[in-house]
Length: 262
Image (cartoon, rainbow, N blue to C red; front, side, top):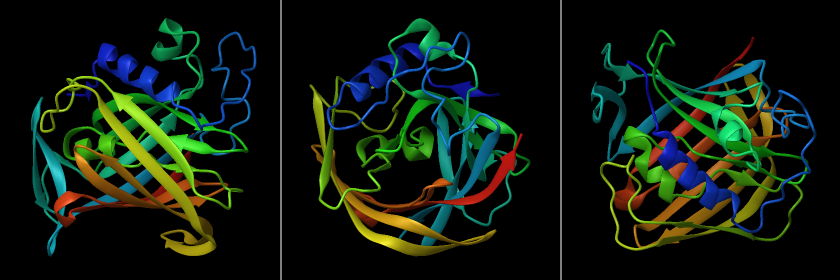
């Protein structure tokens, strides 16, 4: 069964994200059906789907996760075979105005679907969310369901390719977000994130070849704890690798595996 984030919770969170200062949002283009922020995208296009592998690293163990029921997940060894296991992640852009924009015409992001897939690329669960892409910056909502809940409190993938100094992004979240089962807090939660482009020409080896990337190191502080992200961004392919360092020395590594043109 495909499970998606509840729409009300999603809208409340998205509204808090897009009101944050520091991210440049381009002027919308008046299109009758197409999302008004899709027109200048070079990466997140509606005729592409990006597929990623991932690993959850705890100590010496490399793990993945599986869906045990509609609201319960568990971890298993990375090489384990299980029909309920999530083996791949994917990002796909909506071509036309999706549910978020239809209900909120002032929404200022390209709508995307983040999917959690089994080994046969069947969607097991998915998230409807957004990305901001233009020549000044690219900012992406992370995967944040089930085993990735902590990524909601980590630096979001964000790069200003031409920035030579540190840059910041903050996010305020209200009382516990209902879709998060394992993380709770009281009152407002303030995430303070700092980014720095550390290498402009970092070579990354992917299954389809070696590419040049911008390496960005970032940290995020809140009362949940301090988390870190090293991201690798290519101007044609987007974020090709995300390496998170989380509390208790847990790591999550997400890496681009394949691109399919539709």
